[in-house]
Image (cartoon, rainbow, N blue to C red; front, side, top):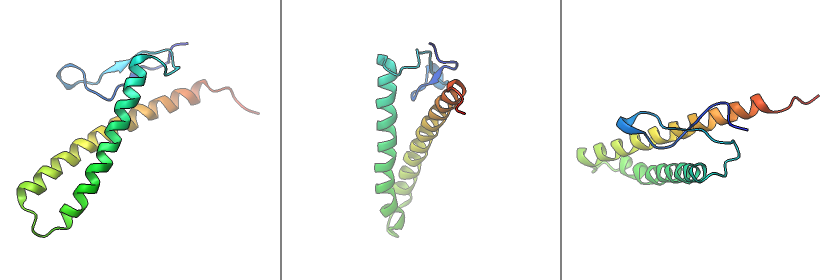
Length: 103
């Protein structure tokens, strides 16, 4: 049974617009698995980056270039994490809508 809503993929389409996948809702297709793996990599990259950023932000000797660089990378990681959260939130809503009611 196809999903009621296309899945937001963790990478942009042409010109940076959102990219979507229509799937059978099993999560077993090649693109679904690839998207799952990409989301995991993006979230782990953000966690790793945060681990590097915290000490840099505490270092009073860090210069403007270093701080700007880490700030840009943190913004990219936050963008990725928000896209993952939006995609997963949509899928949770779809599951709640299709779940049978329990008495």
